[in-house]
Structure formats: structure tokens, C-alpha cells
Length: 473
Image (cartoon, rainbow, N blue to C red; front, side):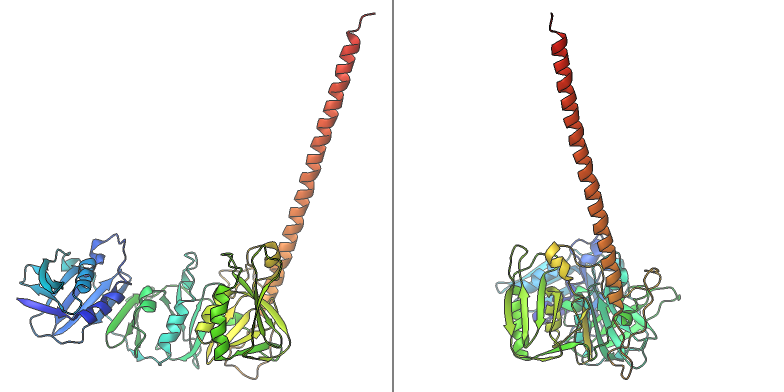
């Protein structure tokens, strides 16, 4: 009888991560299983959704012959929950496999009726050179995943871009169209860039908690998708890249110079903002707007649509540099920036993006236009998402903008402000057209009323004539 011992504490940790890969409604029953194998004493648990493979390696080296089996995830999860202190054991006689675990201290052996091992999809073979990443890489990638887009029409934004186009500074970048996150400085063993798809496994497991290595495996053909491998001492995660060209995000990165007003938030101010902002009024499910007033102190304001006055909260533990400024932003974009530790805020005006930054990390947050607060209109379609010439051929060409690490370069205006002004002109033109249609409609209604009145007068005259004609002399 060949056995594999699964220590309960490790098994629960492994299943917590594997559960992020295993879908609840998979069309292939085999993907609802966990592949448990033992080779040369090394025990691994693997889950897959065809695009990604997550493998956990147990700490304990176990003697015995090699073996493997597919165990339903639900059955394995239930066994780990029942066995609080005792280990779970998989037993196999070569033909049948059973799972031994404990319920209230009583051992039971349950048959494993899993799929055949031959049905399990093979994981890609990673032979590319691996690079041990810097300590801050895991946190940056996890934060970038929180800023990805979920729009299925813009697939290249549904992941974090590892950008190695600049030889001096490699970046982790992500955007959802209204905020852009970028962090440097890293070193990736790639030539240009690769897009890591947004994954519940990356954000929900402990893959990035320890020192992590990174590798990119090219396909057999130039057009084949690459496979990305992230690995630490316990986990190995292999996922297919998001194919496509990530937009040129640096062209929308503003240059923060002397014309900007800056707010340096002290730790107490950050704690206050994280508690205050979510509880302010004005959560309308659309823009979730708050107004930031930079004066002698930082004042945060918000209101419901039906409120006449703003609810105001003053934050004193801040250092301000520059002229008084006011800007409206979506609170759901500001809160992540504060959680990421971006404690320096820079504001140019109420129509330009706000920049949050610190220690090589920067987040660009689009403002909510002031007109949206009075007309209850949707946010402006302008966004910090860069566009390639193929996506928007009608967009005006913008000058090259320096990155946060560049120095001694003349300041340039925001490229987005031009786009915003053009959109505003289009909106005003549309308003004028709508008003013109309204005037025409009102004129037609008035003409219809006059016509009905005339018809009524004519009918009255006809009735009078008929009565006169009916009179006999």
C-alpha cells in the first residue's frame, strides 16, 4: 500500500490558493480536481483552469514509490476541515484510491472517485532563465492587479504590464481607464513587455509574500503566446500571457513641477482619510465623488445629490506647498492610493489628473468634472488610459512627456487637457443641438394647439350656419 501524508496545516494553506484557480462552474469536470503526486519523495498538489497552473510543494519529503491521483477539490476540502489536528492521508493499492481523515477523532476511509489522471492537461515546460525579483516586486504586482480593467472589450488592460522598454528602469504598470498605476525600479529578463493577466490566485494566495523568481517562456512559433512563471519555495504559478500591445502609458504621465500644489500626508492624516472617506455622503454608485480643497489644511468635502451644502472634514496633519487648489475625484480611486502608501498628492487644476506618488510608485487619477456634480451627468469620457494610433487615429498628437525619474527637461502641459477641452466643446455643441430640437418640438406643439383651436372655431361657425339655415321664415 502506497501512501501520501498531507499535513492538515499545509493542506489548508494549499487548498486556499488552489481554490482561486478551480472554477465553481467549469465545463470540464476534470478541472474540478486536484492532482496529487509523489515523485522522488516530493509531494505536490496542482490545480488548473487550462490557462493557468498552480502547484504547491509540501515541505515533508516522503519515502515510497511514485504515485499520482486526481481527487475532487470538494472532497479534499471537506476532509481538511474535518481533520483539525490529524493529518489527511491518501492511500493507493495501484487500482483504487482512498482518502483517510478524521471526524470527531474517529478515522474513516472514503473512496476517491475522481477522474482519470490521463485526462489531466499537461503543464507547460519552463526552460527559460529565471530571475530573482527585488523585494518590492510582489507588493507592486499585487497592487497593480487592483488597478486593472475588467472591460472585456479592452483585453490588454485586463492585466498588469511588466514594461522593460526603458533599459534604465523597468516598470509594473496597470490601468482601468480612469486611474493609472506605475511602480519602478525592477529588472525583468525580457526585451520589451509582457502582460500578466489579472488573477485571483496572485492577489489571494501567498505566492508573492516570499522571495519570488520570474521567467518568461517563449512559444514554439513567434506568434505563439508566451507563458509567465512566478515561483517561490512553495508555489509555482504558470499562466499564459495576455497577447497584445500595451498602450504607451508614459504619454499620459504628467510632469509635476513648480506649478503644481503638493500635499504631504503624515501617517495620522492617512489613517484619518481611510476612515473618513468611505463614510462620507455622496455614494451614488457612479462617480462616488469627493472634493479635495488644498488651502491652509486639507479639507475633504462630499454631499448627496439632494443636499444643498457639502459635508466637510478638515485634515490637519499635512504639509502643503503651493497655491490653494480644488479638485473632485472618485473616492474609490483615492482610497487604494492611500492604502498603497502613496502619501504625496499633487494637483495642477480641477480639470487635470491628480498624481499620488512616493518612492518610485505613482498613481494618476482622473478628476470628476465639476459640471457632473450639478447636472448629475456621467464622468467625462477622458481618461488616463493611453491609446495607440490604431485605437484612436483622430486623437491629436501629443509631445513626449518625461517620466518621474527624468530630470532637467522642460515642463510640458498635460496632453489630456487638450482632449478634455475638445470633449467639452463637443458636449456644448450637443447641448445646443438638443436645445434646438427642444425649441422645434415646442413650436410644433404650439402649432398643433393653434390648429386644433382653429378647427374648433370653424366647427362652431359651421354649427351656427346650420342653425341659421334651419330657421324658416
